[in-house]
Image (cartoon, rainbow over all chains, first blue to last red; front, side, top):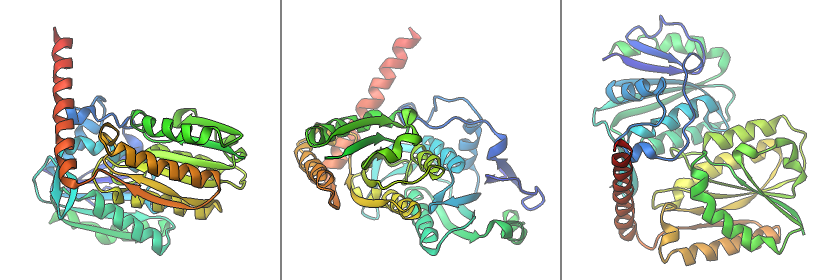
Length: 168
Length: 193
């Protein structure tokens, strides 16, 4: 299984040759309605669109790279919409992890998550973004969660640096 | 006396989850304001936002942070000429700990700071799927009254509430999901026949 790169802007395919690159501008996906029917139907989402495959990939691959604009200290709207659709990868029931209640992820495969956030973000917003990442990965089997921030103009340079990280 | 907007800004179907909270807040505020308006994310008109004196955002968190539907509202408001609005939030999460709403609140605070709006506080509620079906609803109602009073008097308010203990939560919560799954299975069987 190849690794997965999800991006909200065009990037060169040369940087991540061992990955499937998903550009959110080129796929069709509906916004999650939050009805949680998927949790009641063993992970079957009401919408049959490109997210059906992407949510399976996120379960099965060992490295996920997100490239997103940071806005208000959070994922930008198209990315947030995509992430909201990944609720299908959760168990409905609650479990205690480190004294906190949470939903466990369906996939038990250990994986790594690297998030490259670009755009103008203050230190406070970067911290907020990292906290969101930490919270949203609770219950999932990530062996490492890393976030790296840069200006939009530096993104190509940063991607060049991280290029090849998916080769193992 | 003021013009108040209650804005149910969560994802489409989570607006039903927030309805009992919204109705109560509406009840507590109704007699004490000139004009009380209730809007859903889909009916929201950014051109009228700054005509209100106070706005209360109501939403449940989506994947541990603010729902995209609320972010969209923020984005639409960025382009509008600004006015003096006091912003409150009623944030819910399905987990036991109301602290899971903290990050969403920080995002709203951050947005208010950028847009030069006055952020006046929040009520964070845990276990929102079933808390209103348990005795804890009285505690929730009390907290909501306090929030309403703070809104009426233009005061700051920071409150949080949830089920009595995490043990009760775990029992109730997993019962809730078992019921929901059974309901869904029945519904699907009926549809097949």
